[in-house]
Image 1: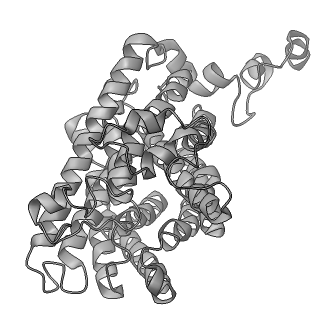
Image 2 (image 1 turned 45 degrees about the vertical axis):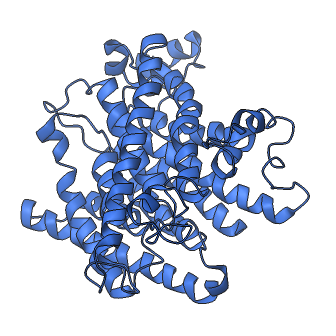
Length: 437
């Protein structure tokens, strides 16, 4: 579990940082990478202070009147209040593992607002958003809450069983909590911030696809901690983990090829950006389904996800929203493909195409819609509050100059000469500039 937690940590920094950084323009690559790194710094602390307790308490988000009482105890011993005794090292391991999930979910959102979101606004957004959106959804799905199979939950309201839902929702490692959640949040935040200057009128190509492909490879490597580490059936972990590893790999392979096929037929060429994006699309789609498919169905799901996500990334030009690095097209669409797709393909006669009666599919669709609604409302509340108070967006002049220098006083590449050396570092003295000139 500690190895898996470390692998998921690797997914954020440097994996996602490199993936997003390479896709950015050269004047914003450092800011893009900083958004991933600071997500780790901020959310990691917040998760230890109250995120774990909100996600896995037995009283949070219930009507028993104990939530406020329990929540108030967090700062005295955040791990002890809900049965997580600090003297048991095994409990710390699970906290560490779940912390990394919260971190990367928040970091994923940053790709939708590249080049233009104030860094200060991002730092304020992070702790509030995870508190209002991520932790409640994690509780609802994984902590025995409304989106799990418990009595009185959403699935139980649809198909009630004997003290629990007759058809429990399937989300093995975070299709709803992580990817649908982050994808919707990215869309809402992008709409609130507005489009980049020149969007749709001038090319905004990735500045370094080598970094992007390295990042995609690190994400793929780290994803085995993400999926395989999310052991659901402890009694069958010896066979379950091997299946999850294989399903994750095959779905990702198929998604990459599906994306490249769409590019070949549509554009005449398969691109390196398409291959990297297809890898991530497949990883996203298989996340909720990885423990409930067999190898052939995992490949089908991946192929569909790669093709649909390749088509979906172009919607921003059709609909006019500026999702800078395709968070919506890859994570929202991929998360929906995986969450709903398992309703078609789930093994053990659960999927509609594998002998089921359609009830699993209905449960998956309703759960996905609920997760979208929750994330949209929570993100809108947080985003509007920050926009009204601190402001979300850089000034147009600063955006034109480049967010790296404006917000961080740095440049990713020291390519300037003469008087332009001021853009390399705020530490460059006037005397040095004169000497260089």
